[in-house]
Image (cartoon, rainbow, N blue to C red):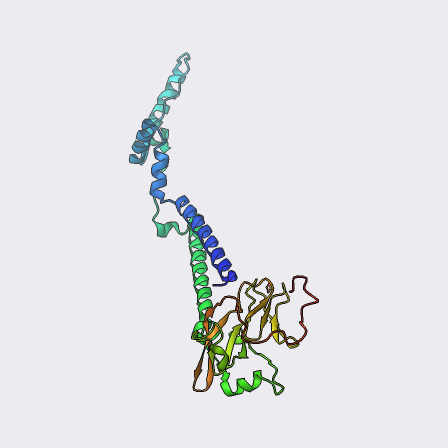
Length: 305
Ligand code: FES
């Protein structure tokens, strides 16, 4: 797994933990209405709860009105008559003299009647966002695997007919011109069958049909290593590492030879197995000569050797 892939996975994990945390907080804040009711009722005094229960049990209480204080006055005949008339009227309409006290009635609504409140809306929105995040991550991981399934880098790649490749990489004057295959991220270069026994690659499966496949990446810090036609080798412009045309270490800070891939001759076609990168230590005895001319980076890189 490359550094970029590791960073993406780490970033995804951090975001995932953050979303999970937010989800848990939102969930705990949206406790059930029954639990919320229990918690605020617990804060009331016993007398208050008792009064509340009795009030709820009595839907309507009707209390007689207190008779207004009657000022003392001298009772004359006329006043006595008026009082008698008023008493008669009161006895005919007793309800009008009563005072009604309404008690507020609290009715619990069903979830269907109450509809979706704001907290439920945000909780559901957060859940939907989390689901979308997980789905997108799944698609991203599938995209990472897709090249392996479809034949891109990471799979076995057919880079062409061996006979054609042999004539492409060795020119008429005997000089070498590697063929770069972007899909395999590899240079195809010649590697004489007669040289295998005196190299460190004997029996490693990296040579087939007189050809080998070198990974394009410099083993020092990962720059793409270009070909230098003049010196007939690979020379890294980043810090000056140099390799001969079969990828053996020659100079610079690189810790080993260029990495390479296993190759196979399948019915005359060269198959590069890019799923496994093969490393090898710096070659002590070189298989081919280097340099065969002036270096491309000798004057440009202060660390070049
Ligand atoms: S990356 Fe090639 S020499 Fe440093």
